[in-house]
Image 1 (tube, rainbow, N blue to C red):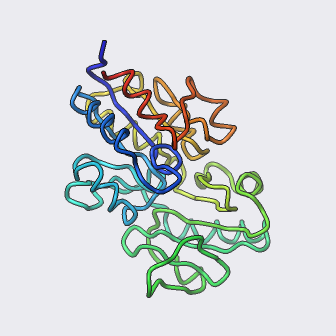
Image 2 (image 1 turned 90 degrees about the vertical axis):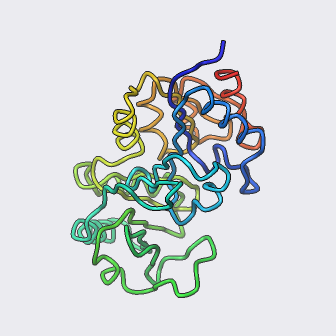
Image 3 (image 1 turned 120 degrees about the horizontal axis):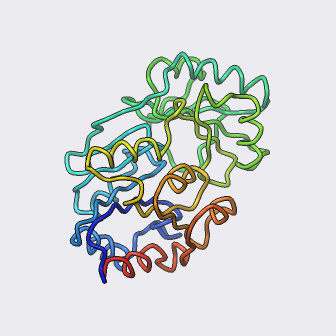
Length: 266
């Protein structure tokens, strides 16, 4: 019997986005079937809104996406941010001081709420940045509200970096996580996560945690997966995610999310 109500909350990279950077036609069809059955489908990602152009095309430019690990809510139809939960520049400056003292060799970057991506001279992006991307001392980049503060270490993996940073920075100061294996730390305002923003969005639509099936693959998904009524990891997920979920499906390259949605909604 098809499930006719509920919420589908899914991460993008490593979850429904394949290794080739695409979302398969099977996954697109499964998401459309869930929506046709009455489900609220929410993209919940660490990506900034500027990286959602192709996702908006794939989903028909409708619905909402939770971006930057919960810091921003983005309207896919209007292509604009409609809600933000920023990290203040003042708090970010204190965090930079604490992290530099505890972990020498860090490079920093920012995703600002209004001005996009910028980085300091020690930070090495792993993707091609736009021409004209600002490169400056990190102190000069912390003048406004941030969606995320990013810190990278070239000689540590992401798990090591997260552990070291968590020991140096209290949870009352900021939310620390990661979503890659490239020595990258992602920092949001204290109390902000994929779970907190998804919870608020669901409440606005009269849905509760018990109504939610959530999909993810990396530590930044753990708060959402822990909160949701039913949590699913793809087979390629981080070990901590595989250990925390209710169900493990096939990998992102094998349409694992689509397999679960087909079972629930067809």
